[in-house]
Length: 188
Image 1 (cartoon, rainbow, N blue to C red):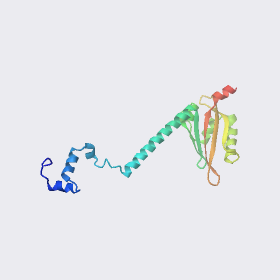
Image 2: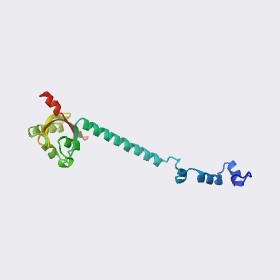
Image 3: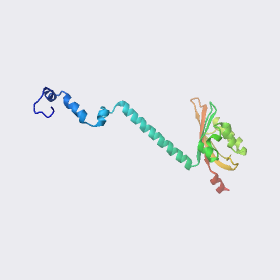
Image 4: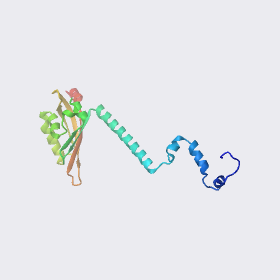
């Protein structure tokens, strides 16, 4: 046995750098259940390292998204994104909420967004956007009114910038609208 004082051939092999299979078996049966469940748990494989990195990246992304959402809410900022090639238009749900709408009550379309802009400001907003898309301005930006669901008016500062291809053709217009109603009321 293991406690015997006699040296066996197996013990002799161990002294010469060979694996003692009896002792290795005892180690596994006495050793931790974690090691037995996953005998390679002490080895960090490249796959495990990659998974750990990906998990950390996902955690960082969630943290960044949460930080952005809180900052946008705190600043009364709503994001919009117009894909000029497909005419898809994204309105952030918090911008819809600022206007007292549920997310599903306003379509994500340019027409729906323009309908929210006060009729007296709509043409000027379109002119400013077109001037920027034509390259006449470095960015789109203007103060305008938007109509809430109940018909009340809110003032917004909207700013955006075109994303252009290598031929300087715009393919997206991305920006944000900030509720500045309180500032406008102080001005008046």
